[in-house]
Length: 53
Image (cartoon, rainbow, N blue to C red):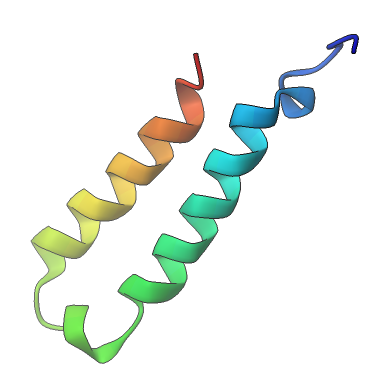
C-alpha cells in the first residue's frame, strides 16, 4: 500500500477516531467542572494523533 498523505497511515486513522471519542466523552457532565483534567486528556489524545509512529 502506497502512502501519499499522512491521512493514509492506519495508525493516524485509529488515533483520530480515538481523539473524536475522547472529545465526546469529555463533553459529559463528569468533566464539566474539572477543566484542567478535561483539557489535559484532550491534548494528550491530539498528541497521539500527531505522533503516530
